[in-house]
Image (cartoon, rainbow, N blue to C red; front, side, top):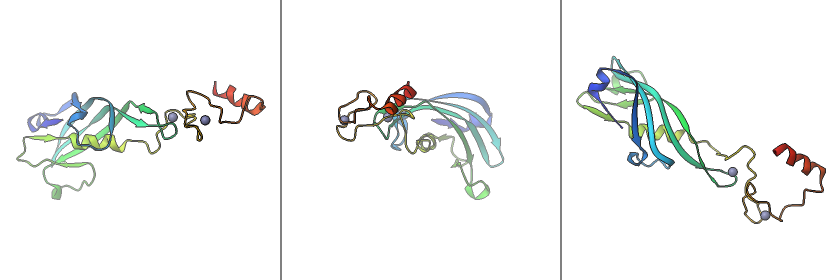
Length: 165
Ligand SMILES: [Zn+2]
Ligand SMILES: [Zn+2]
């Protein structure tokens, strides 16, 4: 996604940008949908521009228990300082260098980074995901197998089944 200096100069509010994840540098993120939207506002500041808003993307993750694919609707805040000269500002984070001679700035790598950093440490398809059977490898969310102890004669097993409903 490229922003023009002329557009930034005149500022804007909640402008929508459509981006394709195919244009992103590879950050290891898998996208369920390559279509990404950004809603951004821009302001002039002393040493460049401030942009802020949200990124909407649908990356997909792998459940750590059952290994199924989980698409997740992410709405992520974005706030970046596009500055002319790193030396002259006292801001240290979320900076993108935007030299005065450049007419446009490409934010794809910054956006790819924000989406990549939002990946959960241990993604789960569901809090109660039962995972894979440690013996036969079947997905216990979809099928039951004979490997497990028969819980039906066990009163606690019956109770647990009720709780899951
Ligand atoms: Zn799972
Ligand atoms: Zn099994």
